[in-house]
Length: 320
Image (cartoon, rainbow, N blue to C red; front, side, top):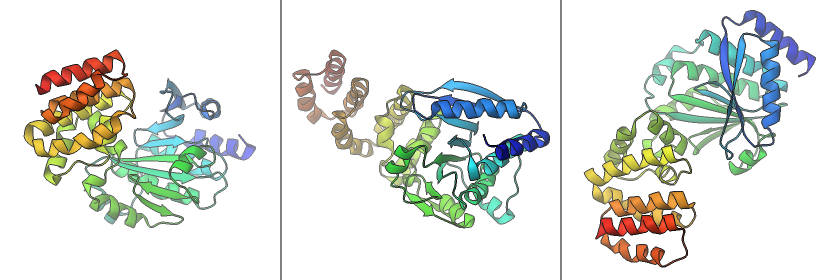
């Protein structure tokens, strides 16, 4: 940390209203040591901040979780440090100033909402972008923000085709680059089509026990949400399990709708690992479509792991 940054943290130590706990997520990513060191320095400079370390999955990014709604995939430095400190202050006070008209609109958001903001340490416009978004998190717990350092996590920036900072992305679909109007962001969150929900928002619904609600949303809309396929083939078993619960309800209540998943799932079959293959075959067996038997027999006669062949055998029995 620079002397200027240490001075800002000294002021935070004097003004923080209560003790708070933040989580430092460690992974195998090259930025993980830098994030750990920052968290340790932060706790030393501000004793009211307790650091809990957790080990993430190998494919996850290291991060600093300030609270359920705010994740930093960054080592706050340069222009990033001031809004990071403000986020800590808001976490301690659990309050934020927000325009009454916007606050009223935010109450209408009853679905998980994922925002991603790309910033950079020397970006003069980025701090204001963070400051505009932070109050939204206090106003509605369904809103989640991930702040990403585009320089430190260049692979994420490349995946999202980032051209400049700040860039704000809503649900992997809508984006704003440079200065933006917060009322426009809020209006988009309030009025968006539920089928535009990204995989993280759908995953959040499953984690919160809303599998039935997700199924009902797709039943009401009459089509499978595009991001739902990512949950059915997710590498984490709890996520797949939740998605399979949704599928079972769709099969029971609207088989024609559930059958929309067959071809997309089959296209994904050869791209996923053996554990996921088994679950895909289970789902296909539950659909009751006898025309799948020929494909399943090809798996029995092919070069697949024993566990995959066993899942294919069970699916054939289900369809027979």
